[in-house]
Image 1: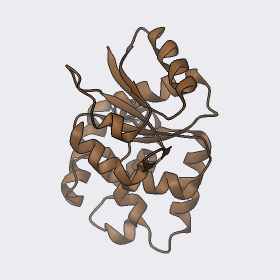
Image 2: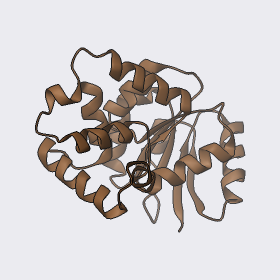
Image 3: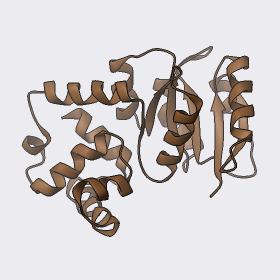
Length: 209
């Protein structure tokens, strides 16, 4: 397994730190490291990144507004936000806009590395406090997923609730005591019923309920 990574952060010192850190991780290859969105838009690489670790506040503006453009330029990349602040609204917006995760810069390097591996394997990279914020937000909504998607079975709803916590398919299988294959089949049925195509779209759908 080799995960191709792109870094976007206005802190030169932080970028250098992460480049050095991931160079020492045999499962990662850093394709590029830039300080702003405008630099990202000019990036030319021989291969597409699997993951782009994206800071929020950049010289050219708030990157949350540009997630869709980044995804157009790098259609095969998972966008994972790396934030200096714990912001429930920002994490909610990031996932709705198509990000595949939201991590805090206060997290350890090992946690960030493991979270990115989980994202590559199909999970969602979320710092624990962000998971709590998302669950609190979901619980505070007047309508539940069952209300807006009555076509989903109870088992499918249970699986959706685990997806929101950022679990990989492997962990969902262990938690629900089902096979990895069954998880994938459930997800296919959910995607078809909700007219979506991916976990990130599913999380965005759930966050909108």
